[in-house]
Image (cartoon, rainbow, N blue to C red; front, side, top):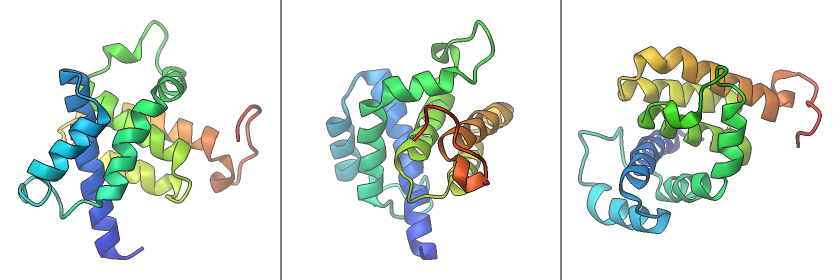
Length: 160
C-alpha cells in the first residue's frame, strides 16, 4: 500500500466515524449518509480530513458496521466492565470502537496492528484522550481474539 492509499484510508476512517455518529444521532441509514458524504463533504472539507477519502473503503465501513452491528456490539460488550453497557459509552467512542471492530472482524486485508494504531490516532482527532486507554484495550483484546495468528497465538475456541 502506498502512502497515498494509506492517507485515503485514514481519511475514509475519519469520515466513517463521523458518518456512524450522524447515523446514530439522526437515524439516517447507511445509503443516505454515504450519498450525503459523497455529494456534500468529500473534496469540500479539506480542513477536516487528512486527504481525499477512499470512497469504496468508506462505503464498506459505513455499510459494514450496521450490517454486523449485533455481532460487533456483542464482541465489544465482552470487554466492558461489569454492569456497563455499550450504550453508556460516549457516542463518538462507540463509533470508533465499532469501526475498529468491524475492520478487525471483516477486513482481514488490513493488519490488526494497523487497525489499532489508526483508531488510536483517530481517537485523538476526536479529543477522546481520556478514553484512549479503553479504546486501545478493547481493540487489542478483540484483535487477539479475532486475529490470533497475527500475534503468533493459538486461535481461541469458536473463532474463525
